[in-house]
Length: 94
Image (cartoon, rainbow, N blue to C red; front, side, top):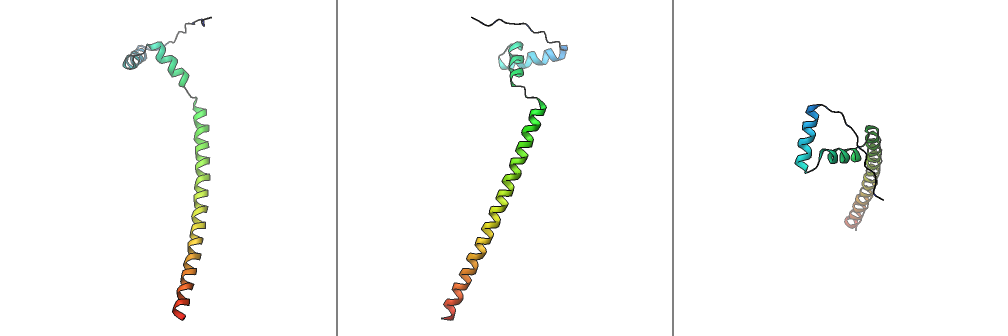
């Protein structure tokens, strides 16, 4: 059974209507379809704030992980340098 359509009145100024009509026309859509698509894709600001907070937390964890890895690499390079210096000293002393 096809779904029943419901008309929704959307009060707006003449300038808003003109802008919406121009945008809809440029996209090859009716004003109603432009409004439907816009409403379907709308994300409330608090949702964006939560997403931004998640991005910040994840970035902080990644930065901490990278810093830890760089510290381990630096320690490893220092050990390698010490071993190479020790090995070179043994060659010279023979």
